[in-house]
Length: 176
Image (spheres, rainbow, N blue to C red):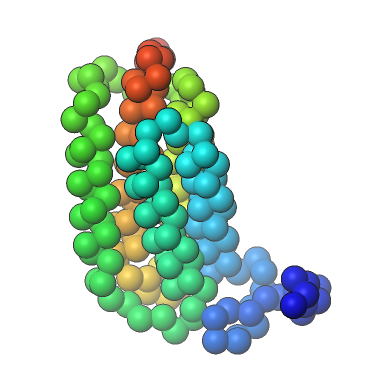
């Protein structure tokens, strides 16, 4: 099977279901940014020192793939099926936070390589959230997707702190 189809050479692509749309439409920005996040999370996975974190990252990548497929479907169902996935993220955040020292203030992105990559993922996640919110203005998106993406950015922040802590690197606290 050829990887290239040449059908997108004119600036359009197919959604799930076959409808052709412009490659610069809001829907493509949304699921394209989710795909970018997923790729960045793959790099984060390769850098994390902790197996528990790597397992959570893979779980998140699978959910992101599902979210991307839903966003690529023009007439997708609006449901709350993913609410347990949001709750699972919250449990992971709580578990990862338990070992961290008390919060001392906003931190500058950086530290060890895995923490820095978690911050990159967090910022891409925030952009994905904004893109999905724009899409939601045109066509309703399942509420759990918005919650999941919002909570995922929180998880990524905690993962960054945790990776630095596990590897003995002090956070650099933001100075006004």
